[in-house]
Amino acid sequence: MANQFANTVARIKKYWSCYVFIAPFFLLFFVFQFFPILWSFWLSFRKWNGLGPAEFVGLQNYIHLLTDRMFLNALGNTAIYWASGILIMIPIALVIAGLLNYRMLFGRNFYKTITFLPYITATVAVGLIFGIMFDYNSGLINQIIARFGGDPLRWLNSTKYSKIPVISLFIWRLTPWFTMILYTGLLNIPLELYEAATIDGANILQKFRKITVPSLSHILLFCFITVSVESWKIFSEPYILTRGGPGSSSLSIFQYLYVNGFTIFKLGYASAIGYVLTFILFAVSAMQFRLMNKWVKN
Amino acid sequence: MKSRKPNIIHFNFASISVHSTLMLVSLIAIFPVFWMVLTSLKPPGESFSTISSMFTRNPTISNYLSVSNLVPIYRNFFNSVFVSFFGTIATVFFCSLAGFSFAKFDFPGRNALFMVLLATMIIPPEASVIPVFIIMRNLGWINNLLSLIVPRAATAVGIFYMRQYINDFPDELMEQARIDGCNNFKIYWRILIPVIIPAISAWASLALVNRWNDFFWPLIFMRSREMFTLMVSISLLPVSEGLSTPWPVIMAGSSIAVLPLVIMYIVLSRFHLRELTSGAVKG
Image (cartoon, rainbow over all chains, first blue to last red; front, side, top):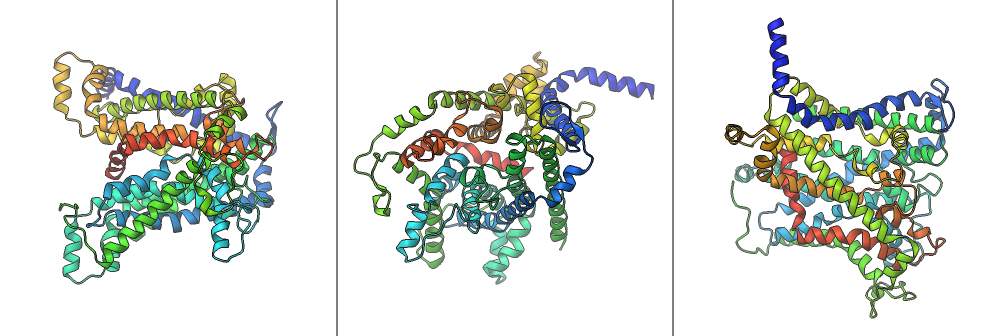
């Protein structure tokens, strides 16, 4: 026992430089992530405007969230952004990845370069572009609608449509990232599998279901979790396009946190929102892990 | 694995639909950027009201000059370059160093520490932004570019990715270097770095894109016009002339923010991002 302990100490001494190499990460994590998370938890039970002492209010912040219409709207909107990420973005990315992997594709590198381009651009800058294109009076989208004889829509300032520009921007900019990941996954599936299936008389849908999806299951799980994190903490897109409005029709949870924390200085309330957001992300990730495990087994 | 290179162009239904769909996707991908540049070159007063007026006969750079009258764009540009450059260098250095340690040394506690590192990935740092802001204020880093560089100088994802890549580095090379009297840092600096250049350039590209395009953190930490990064600065363009900033001026601002990376991306041929995703997939 004592010998083993001495042995470990000797090894720690021998490998001291390894600890120095990994220390920066753990130090930064502790100061800028771990400690803030604990502090945030403490704050979420308090009322504080940033000056003076914080007043303990128990669960009041959390209870207030349950009846706060703005927050509930933000929750619903963010859930819609999330759903559009899962149900629209990932399928589009999978289709484009499949097309890029087409055996007889001519100009593959050209298409790969161009289809990845949106990911390089800044959300803020493209948000300004989309804002102008979705403008009611002379935006490009309404011009195209008018050309086909339709009525122009108030994309950015009607509660009914304001989420559409936000979702368009979100999908336009982030799809290429998932296309790239799924494309790399497709490259690792041996072509022989598809050839054998063709000989057995499988059609393209059967091949997709029986070969492509199972082979990509881990990568798809990775994509689903990443897109969930990205969509639950969505901020720039609604901030630039609509400021969350009109009303709170396109407000996201994280935007509401920002407003509470940095505009009206309800710091305890903002911390409670942050905790709800963290909890949702945990739940969503765990749910996807379980669903995927079940699905892979079947 | 069989080659995926086509030897002849096929003109059947499948081929035509694949190619035309990809052309449409490419068009959608490139159009907003293309349209932004065209609009930014329009002289003030020229109409937008028809689609056919997309191109202008009299391109001008006056909108770019107007941007510099509205916001301190040169200073903002410099801030973005500074943060992106040093942020990228720092993250590449610290992530590869820690990745090296996790991949190549069996030090006590290695696996436990690595599990901790993986677990940190699911916690979004944005959720506890209030305390982070207070910490920055106490450090005196509000309105200081350090607040945008230091916190993400070593990230869990980066270390994870580097470790995956460095795992394949042959132990014999390390033994050889050790016999020649190299210490661990010298092995990292002289032997490992040259071998992992593909991984480093991939991670550097991604870090660069993220730092340059970052909006939320500079919005929070930077409190004066001079200290804003480009993204925060251009986000204020639409309201900087009392809600009536001409569109071509806004688009000129956007172009200044978007084009540097787009040009680099095309010149440096796709930023080696393929390396990056193959690393992710391998993990």
